[in-house]
Every structure is written in C-alpha cells, then in structure tokens.
Length: 197
Image (cartoon, rainbow, N blue to C red; front, top):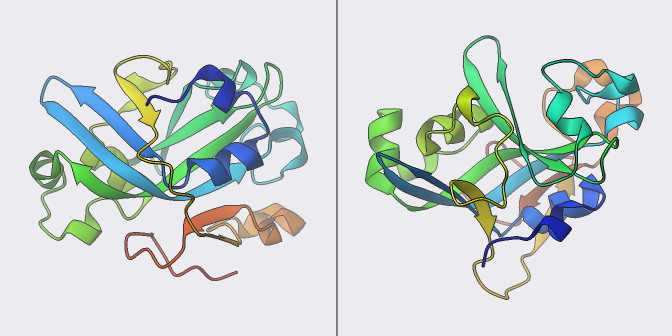
C-alpha cells in the first residue's frame, strides 16, 4: 500500500526511522524498478548544521523542503551523482530524509543495465548508485510521492530491526556530525557502509 501524505507530515526523525523496511518504487517508460529501503539519514533543517536548509537557507535548490512533507528533494553532489531525499514535516519546517541504500527487489535487469554492473549488492549501495539504478534524475525534483510515478509503499506488517548510527561524510557539521540520525536495517548486506556509530 502506498504511503499517505500523513505519513510524511511528521518529524523527519520519525519518518526516517519508519522508512526503513518500506519499498521505493519508480515507474518509467523503460520499466518499473523497486527496492527495499535499508539505509536512510535524517536532516533536521534549522537545527542541523549538516542540513542544506540549516539556518533558514531557502534557495532555488532547497525550496521544495520548505513545503509540506511527501515530495522528492533531488540534488546533485560533485556535479556527478544524483541523490534522492524525502521531504518531511509541515510547511516551513525544512526537514528531509536522504535515501542512502536499497535492496533491489524488482526490475533488477533494468537496474543492472542502468548501472553497468551485475553484482546485486552493488546496484543500490549508496545514494548516487541507487538513483542511477532506479532511473531517478534531476527531472524528478519536486515530484509528489503520493503520485503514481515515484512513491514509497509498505511491503508487509513486519517491524524491522533498526540500528541508529552517525551519519556519513558530515564531518564539517560540528557537533551535528555525532548525531545518531542514520538508520539502517540491522544485518542487511545491502547498506552503503558498516553501521559504525
């Protein structure tokens, strides 16, 4: 079942933790790709020095974060890799959840073609990798995650075991680098890096 708007209209920390074990779906003309979310990071807006929206930085890049939850915040790092975030919380509360890794579940041949890789564990084991495998591009910026193109759905009623650790590559963020705001599916072999923390 597709997640409703209400799911996203809560604290980014709650949304982040509860996204683990859900399934990301992208429908494109080339086919449908799906992956189980096994790793995420929460970025908590005004109070988080690691967040793009820290200290109310409303820019063209971050504008979608200042709207209501349930939209796709897509950006590019190093001019090369596309990353997908889920906007969380209420309007004017710019929180987001970075999807860091997926366990591929459907459309695996399409993912392999897009990535030019065969090994299942390497298809979506990082935010740039998963966007390439899923066919998520900058043209998906601002998509409504309650639509039928790019969305997140429940798989079953199982409550996943989750570990909380420090986020990755945020050493510039002062004390925020130590916040345990990365959530991973315990014992998953598909996460991007060991669950250190």
